[in-house]
Image (cartoon, rainbow, N blue to C red; front, side, top):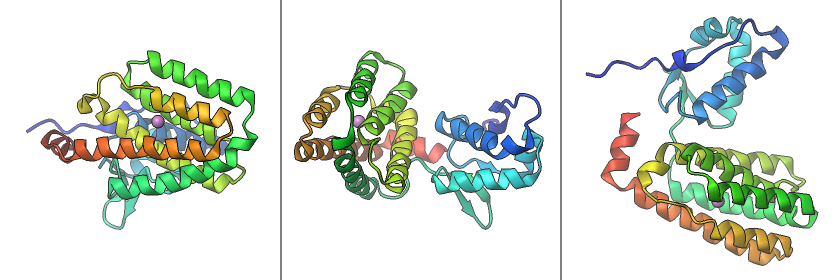
Length: 236
Ligand code: NI
């Protein structure tokens, strides 16, 4: 019998929080704790515990939890209340099919509006990814690279959905990349995609994006089928 971890203890709150900032401080604090794994999947978050922890009333806590639920970082059930959501919700193949649809459209809208500065920013992320060995950083940089390519899409709701998908992948990579034993990740896909984006070749960019995401879902599906992955998921 292992000792029951107390994930909320990992969260530090500096001093009293001004009432008008309470919701956003709680939301940001919990989001980063979920994304970096201090609050693992399955952790129940009780409103009163959080209100005590942050020294606020339950109202901003409730609002923050609602925001995190909308971002699919929490799932709220009648019995358990708010619970940190599983790493990949439902079927990984369906998740990636949707991501391909959404990200292709964001890319199509964004490509003609991207500036040389946007291209340079994306290129800098590739260089950082090339040098990075820390798996949590790799997940974050991958999300930032992709978002840089989509960032000029005028449809803000589309961009939010795209970012939700990338957040989900980032969390997954954070927990599993090391166990997946991929070794050093090649940046060839990212480089080819950026080149096509810079050439404003929308068709080629989208084709490369599809290949990139399909390769991702293949690796993840293969990994999730291994006994090691199954025991990791069950342990949460
Ligand atoms: Ni990528």
